[in-house]
Image (cartoon, rainbow, N blue to C red):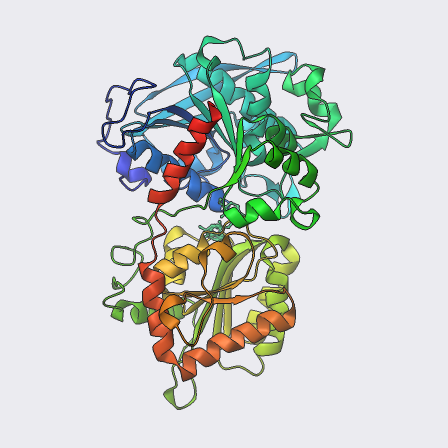
Amino acid sequence: MGKKSPSSTKGKNRKDPAPVSGKNSAETGKECKRIFWCTSECTPYAKSGGLADVSASLPAALAERGHEITIIMPYYNWKMNKLSLHYNGGMFTLEVPFAEEKFYCRVRKLELEKNLTYCFIEYDRFFDRPALYDYQGNEFEDNAERFIFFSRACMELIRYLGKKADILHLNDWHTALCAAYLKSPLYRNEEVFKECKSILTLHNVGYQGNFSKEKFAYTGLPWEFFRYDALEYYDRMNFLKGGIALAHEVNTVSPTYAKEILSAEYGCGLESTLQYCNQCGRLRGILNGIDVKEWDPANDKALPVSYSAENMAGKEKAKEALAKYFHISCKGKKGRKLPLFGVISRLAAQKGLDVFADVLEELLPVMEARFILIGAGDPHLEWRYCSLAERFPEKFACYIGMAEEKLAHLLEAGCDFFVMPSRYEPCGLNQMYSMRYGTLPIVRSTGGLADTVKNYDKNDPSASTGFVFYDLTIQGLRDTVIWAEKTYSDSFEDILQMRKTAMNTDFSWDHTAQQYEEMYSDAYK
Ligand code: ADP
Ligand code: GLC
């Protein structure tokens, strides 16, 4: 699959005939499906986190396996206009009912690859903003309206396109409402939706789209959908709950997270809805993959020198370039090589980076190692990290904001260790990106981190890929950072072994795309 950078669309106005829904793919022997992937973000067009990366790479993997994919997402004019994309599929106006009114939006169609089309919904009143969901940690007040409108636009667009939909693949709360629409009298008898099944992928149960019931009328749904077994949640309207209750199949993005969310600790108030969904056999966990072509140290333009598990010399060059970018030196007393620890993350409570800031307060005055952080989100945490950088400029540097992709790549490559002390982590992509670049993750054992990182075993470093701790406490994280630092200085040969194992681990979508196909088939059972 080609790289999905905006420039890669040039000269690629491919108009191959769409495969007919229900035919067998010669390559895979599987039944090919017409899948509409509805998402609020997708790399490289608009991104706040991993949902964007998965929305780019999983549909692409499914298209490669013969399915016909249409990705529907909002057009964030403020950001996307700058990309100057050529909409080779054309543009047209779509009428979208909203409460008693009708809104008119523009659809921009981009036919990127064979079987892979993007439809961007342009409606500036809701989406022409410098951020996707919030401003400096405060949610936009009209988020309910924005995503009711977007979900309704997805349904209207599919109806307008007029091709029979097999799967409506919904992602997180932003589009979960489509599961209700599909079952409602508004759409269930439409020809294009007659055999359609909905899938809801839970990338993060911590964000639910929980709004006042006053706004329910905007949906246009009958009040029977405002019930305990649909969208109602403690007399409010909860999009994610509605999606879990009404989608034909539901999945999380790692097996461990699928179990964790059944408990009050991780279910964020939706544990009983999730337990019921699980009892009905509609809940499963499918581990995310990563785009191994986009994230490939052997072929990455963001790196000064490429490298691989066989020839790791380029990793040192990446470390030098990264340190130079952040104006720090990784040479210690007597020319000692110092380990470099890195983070790139949303600064949200989920990520446990408040505890990391506490750990740095303790370690920076006494430890020689170097630390780098790229992050944005909670203003208080942003301030704490800036303050650390001011007080310890030789040892710690940070970049506050959303960095360009190439800096993110350089960070994954140039660090020795990648820190992810998450309170919870539905999957996490960064630990997989870092392992792919031979950077060993330091993780708390939760969700996808527990499913992907193998803890360091002194007796078997070649079966280890990182450092794992269990309790999110200052002591737990601090001791693990010290443990990694000691291993780097005293047993560097183990680090080299672990890097090799990490780099040779297969995190591609090959296995997991198949599990999605199984889920699509199960939705029909
Ligand atoms: P989450 O989706 O919870 O944020 P993931 O690990 O799944 O966590 O994915 C995070 C993605 O967002 C990665 O691609 C990461 O590089 C990127 N990212 C997070 N914060 C930033 C930032 N400040 N600048 C650039 N990229 C970021
Ligand atoms: C969410 C989760 C993250 C996951 C990503 C992609 O944002 O927080 O763990 O990797 O979605 O599925």
